[in-house]
Image 1 (tube, helix red, strand yellow):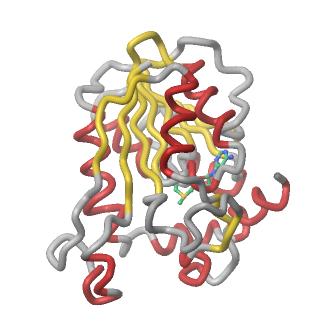
Image 2: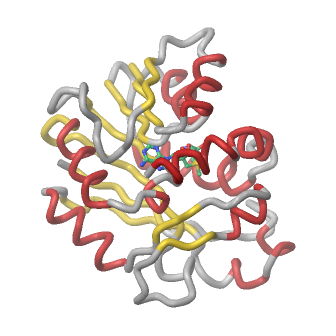
Length: 226
Ligand SMILES: C[S@@+](CC[C@H](N)C(=O)[O-])C[C@H]1O[C@@H](n2cnc3c(N)ncnc32)[C@H](O)[C@@H]1O
C-alpha cells in the first residue's frame, strides 16, 4: 500500500499541471458525473479519491456540503490550499478504510477515476456503501475495464498510459467487468445507470491521439443506489 501512496504523492505536481488541458476529465467526465449525480444542493456528499479537490469544489459550488478524502497527503495539501472560498472538509484517508466517518452519513458519494487504482476494490465499495444513507447515490467513473487492459481475464496491477503521460509509474488494478459490477451488487448496491461516453473530435482530442479511442469506450460511469 505504501508504495502506491508514494506513487500518487510522487506524481502530484505532474497530475496537477496536467489538469487544465485534460479534455477527458473537464469536457466529458465532469459534466457526465454531475448529470448522473442529480440535485445536490444542501446534500452531504463525499468525494472519494478527491485528488487536488477539483470535483469537490464543483460540488460545493452547487451547494453541497462536501467531504473530500484521498490517500495522497500531497494532493490533500493542494486541495486544502485551494479551499479558500468553500468550507470543504478534506482528510487523508484510504478509500478502503474510511474509519472515523460514521455509517449512513452522506446523501451521495462520488469517486472520479480512482477505483481502478485500488487493489482491494471490494473494501472500497463496501466502505462507500457503509457511509451512504439508505437510498443514497454513488456515482463513479473508471477506465473501461473491457478496453483498458489487453489481457482481459488477467486481474493484475499494471502501469497504464497515464504513467507515460505523467512521466512516473502509476499502478492500476485491472478487474473484469463482471467482477467490478458483482462486487457492487454483493455490497448491497442496486445498479441505477451505466454510461459509456462517446469520444469524438469535438469533445476531446481522442481522434488526434489515437483513432481507436473513437471506436471503443474509454470510460465507464456507474450510478448505484444504496
Ligand atoms: C486519476 S486521480 C483522480 C483525482 C480526482 N478524483 C479527479 O478526477 O481529479 C486518482 C486519485 O485517486 C487517489 N487514490 C488512489 N487510490 C486511493 C485509495 N486507495 N484511497 C484514496 N485515494 C486513492 C489518488 O491519490 C488520486 O488522487
